[in-house]
Structure formats: structure tokens, C-alpha cells
Length: 283
Image 1 (cartoon, one colour):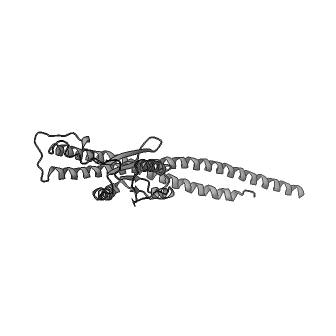
Image 2 (tube, helix red, strand yellow):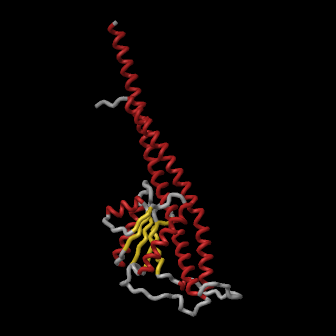
Image 3 (cartoon, one colour):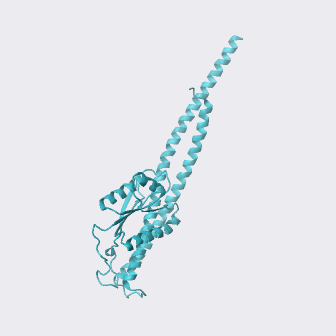
């Protein structure tokens, strides 16, 4: 079938519209990644404040009293995987689920908690059983509320004995690829925090063990906030890279279509000139 100039012109208009959409998506992804990156230091400062409080509280209890019981390898393991809520993020979900699935097989994990609609669909394709899921945030302002929900689910399983070990798997911003982090959340390691006796003991209204338990939960909440914020930044950076590649491909396609339209236009003009020349000879 002979290609018509009108068809090529229509395709050029369609490709230009697609280019505008891709450009808008790229701009949104860049803005959200930048905003999420800007919040990370604040979250880490909050975690450091809670960590310092844990160090002060540890000085109030006897050495080793806050360590909790040791859990052996037979105890249930819980894996929290943070995936993407929206599409066009390249291999983002694949990389996160690869690590989560490998961790579950290695540790004999009993349950998978998953965040992100696109990640949930990818997990179903892998026939992974998801015990609980929720949409991943799309704006950094939503991080705190989601971290609250995940903390509730996490401690409900810890307190009921359904899990003793918890790992969280998420992507962190990286240059040119998806860097996946696997972090242990439970059992809580009080050994990370040096005891800080200070000049004078703090005034408390709770038993030291109760205070430590509350501070530990608050620190886990801060770790979840950090993971969610980093994952949101990494997801949008992955989307930014995908949209940049798509933009390049669309521009290449557009150049080819414009070149083809010029060629067809020249062929039409040549045909008209030939027809006019032939008509003049007959006259």
C-alpha cells in the first residue's frame, strides 16, 4: 500500500502529542525525586534524635537487660517489600522483588508485606503470596501516614508471635541503576546505640524497659519513613531515566517522520509537475 502524505502528517501530530506527555511525566518525576531527596536528611535527623534518647534510656537499665530474647532460625521471618505504585519505572519492581524473593527462600519467610500497586501485580505474576498490601505513596507528604500503617501491621505480627525477624527491602537513589537495600528491623539491635549517662539522669515517668520499648518502636517508625522516602526518590529517578530514554526515541521517530513527509511532499510536487508538463505537450 502506497504511503500517503496525509497519513504521515497525522502520525507526526500524534508523535508530537506523545512527546509532550513524556516531557510532562519526566518533569513530574524529576520534581518528586528532588522533593523526596530533600526530605531524607530531616528523617535521618529525627532518627538520630530517637537514637540518642535510646542511648540515654539504656544507661538506666542494667547491662544486657534491653537485649531481648534471642530468636533462632526457626522463628518466622517477615519481609516488607517497597515497590512502585505507578508504571514507567523500568526494572524497579523486578530488582526489588528479586531480592525479596531470594530473602524469603533463604530464610523460609512466612509472610510478605508489599507496598505498591505495580509491585503487587508483579508479585502475582511470580505467584508470590502476599499477606498484606497497601498503595505506595506518590507524594513525600504521605510518607508518615503510610509508615504508621506499616508499623501497626509489623508490631501486630511481632506481638502475636507470627514473626520474630523482620527485613525490609527497598530501592535507594543511585547513579544510572536501581540499588536495592536489605535492612533488618527486628529483632531490634540495641547494641547500635552507645549508652549515654550524661551529666545528670533524665527525668522519666515510665519504667526504663517500657520507655525503651516505646523508643524502639519510634526508631523503627523512623527507619520505615527513611525507607519509604528513599524508595519514592529512587522510583521517580527510575521513571525519569525511562522517560528520558523514551523522549530520545520519540525525537528520533519524529525526525524520521518529518524526513519522510518532506520526501512524500517532494514526490507529490514532482508528480504534479510531470502531469502539467504532459498536459501542455498534448495541447
